Image (cartoon, rainbow, N blue to C red; front, side, top):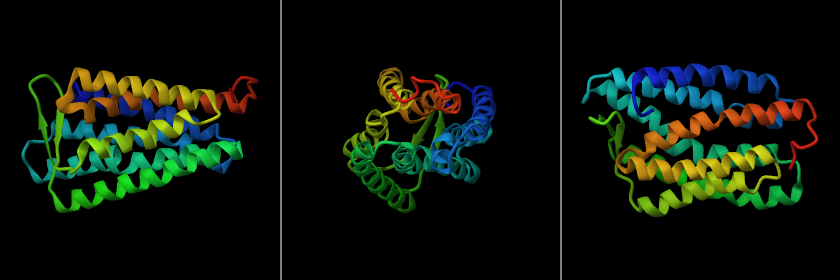
Length: 215
């Protein structure tokens, strides 16, 4: 994440515990993808923690940058809408969410091809951030599609905590871009990682049949 290696490793450890607990509380296989979100964020933050400690430029730093960007730019835009779709109980809502999975897949494929063609790198800035440098054509259009696929799919969910996750993630995006536009990928991913604790709240409310969990 941004800030420091210690902050990344701490976030990774906490998210690993939360992700494991979320998976343990999952009642159905269809909810496993969503329950695993904090655990995947834990891996992503672990990668960035090592990125902080790696000399730059170097082959190892580039490899870690590719690893981080795989999660940040390739995995999440397709993973999130699919996870939300699978856990959604209402067929009407599922039909609304389905197009987001297609949009997310297009974004992921476009980013993957560009990362294969164009090298990426990571730069540790003086103000405690990591700036991932990569060439992505139509970056504003792709960025908008990314946000629509991820946050949009969550906002369409019938489940209260998933919708809340989507709303707060959008707010976090605005803060990250305003706070550090040059490193917003790293900053927003950190915020989203912390916000993924709401996954455990969702799973816990389902498990205990909280009458408000579906709101």
